[in-house]
Every structure is written in C-alpha cells, then in structure tokens.
Image 1 (tube, rainbow, N blue to C red):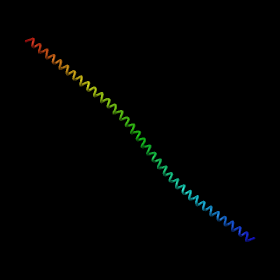
Image 2 (image 1 turned 180 degrees about the horizontal axis):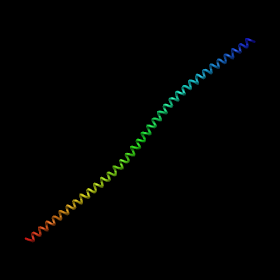
Image 3 (image 1 turned 60 degrees about the vertical axis):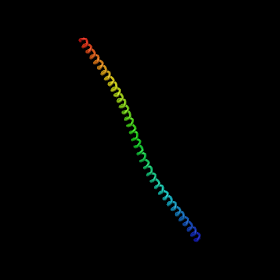
Image 4 (image 1 turned 120 degrees about the vertical axis):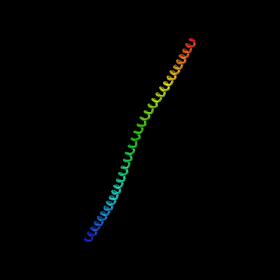
Length: 126
C-alpha cells in the first residue's frame, strides 16, 4: 500500500507542479499582454496629445482667419466710403469748375458789354 500511496502522491505532486507551471506561463503571458497594453496606452495618449495640440493650432489659425476676414470686411467698407467721398469731391470740383467758367464767361460778357457801351458813348460824344 505504501507503493500505491507513494505513486498517487507523486502523481498529485506532478499534476500540481504542472498546474503551477501552467499558471506561471499564463501569468507571464498576461504580464506581457499587460505590458503591451500599457505601451499601446502610452502611444495612444501621445497621439491624442498631438491631435489635441493640432486641434488647438487649427482653432488659433481659424480664429486668426476670422479676425483677418473681419478686418478685411471693415477695410473694404472704409475704402468704399472713401471712394464715394472721392466721387462726391470730384463732382463738387467739376460743378465748381463749371460755375467758375460760367462766372468768367458772364464777367467777360459784362466787360464786353461795358466796353461796348463806353465805345458807343464815346462815339456819340464825337
């Protein structure tokens, strides 16, 4: 009976040792998987951090574009007002020039008429 007992004992010990070896292998595999997952997690965090940085840069660039577009719109409005003012000044200058020409013409006509009258008066005196 001792031999049978010893045989069973050895068999159980071998099975336990094999079970322990399998458990150690599983733990090692799980540890490797865990290390790989942690490495992947670090990579994903770095990628996300880069993406957030790019997103922030894109937001800043978009804001700058919006500000520039708004400034351009304001500048266009100012230019349009200045063009309208310049056109009004041109029209007024043209009107003043025409008025000056009319006045000069009227003065010339008046001077001519005055000279003509003076000549007529001198002719009558003679």
